[in-house]
Image 1 (cartoon, rainbow, N blue to C red):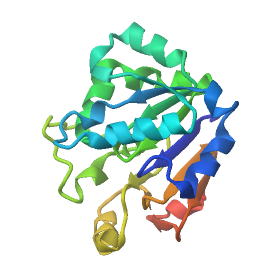
Image 2 (cartoon, rainbow, N blue to C red):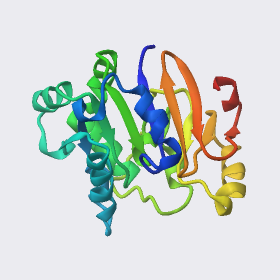
Image 3 (cartoon, rainbow, N blue to C red):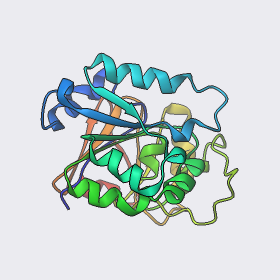
Image 4 (spheres, rainbow, N blue to C red):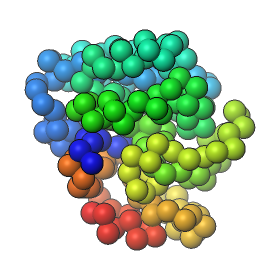
Length: 218
């Protein structure tokens, strides 16, 4: 597996930014980002979408928004093919996975990664990269309003990801992880998972929190 992924809770905060820049094949000003905002659709407050776009632009990236709802299969593949980075932003995880399937994104993300594209996940965008999105419902905020029955993720990494970990969620995550079949990595907003050449690294601030044997990958 030669995929390059950068999986986060909160984009590119100062604590992880340098680790991301190291992954780039060229300078940010020469990199084109396909920014996928689709997960934000069900959210009342979507201001964070523009915050993330502005963050990328301030770092020098060329940013093009690519909404999964608005593209036919061939158009979507073509637009993503011309980008260096596929940035899947956060929001409602169930809604995002529904459109990942409807758009055909799930069918060609692996060929795109094999072409050398870098996948960046933010919150929901990171959760769908794992084997299941079951963890998305644990806080009670992320509602399955599209009534997904199949919660299988893209399986780009062999562990599930819990996003936005802070002190108040630690005991709950520990309890819920016992019901989960898969290994689990819990990420704070100051951490990220780097996947490159089949190896996994947790970068950023704070002690890693692994469950169900996830530490064996790091």
